[in-house]
Length: 310
Image 1 (tube, rainbow, N blue to C red):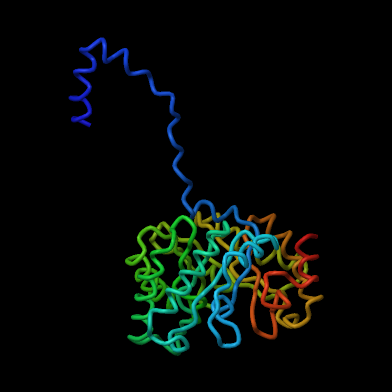
Image 2: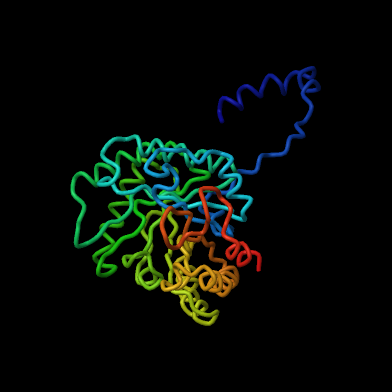
């Protein structure tokens, strides 16, 4: 500031210079809205489950930008992915690099990505040095994704007996990611498989750049959906937190019944929109149940297309 003032003195003393400098008409640039504040405005996304994003029939493959453009054309405005546990992928850094490429393709199609750095962490099978080292190594790679388009979460789901047992582990996990990725928004869920019941028993971490997630496979009519997610919305308002329904299926016993599952979505999605809770459906997958798509492409089964359009 002082240097600017000194440089301004000769201009003020020189009429020629003063008249030669027209007043600036440029409008000040509006700073971009942080990702954390934009997430609550998302509407509908979908999960791309574990290996589907990077392999088919045990062979590596890249979905590519065209696939993601088709995903967006199917009606989705964000995607969620997570990396399988190190026990499945091995210790090399290649899998994190591969997922970073997948995320870049999705971002290029205009899709924000929620990215889990590992799969499960369980109280009765605590992580050892290998798992913690893998989390840190993957976080270092994935920190090179765009913080304006990518949310990082340490795990897909946690399984702990209560919030008191989970909280110190959660905060340690978030700390590993925060040291690697100081600018990224981080996401966390409750201690019981990411359920709504466990979320509302938790308090948010001290880190201000975090959001919370809920996973739901309960189905039910609009009254049941309103009852449980009304409690989630109340928790959100009480704590000033953004909450995303990062996994939504129908009732568990509808996982292989597409008509019943689609009927569940017709009940739940309008309620969640009204409560301003963004949703990511489960899932694009190679599995035999909870499968949104008939093949390798992004086109949905007709039952789900109809449910999303209703």
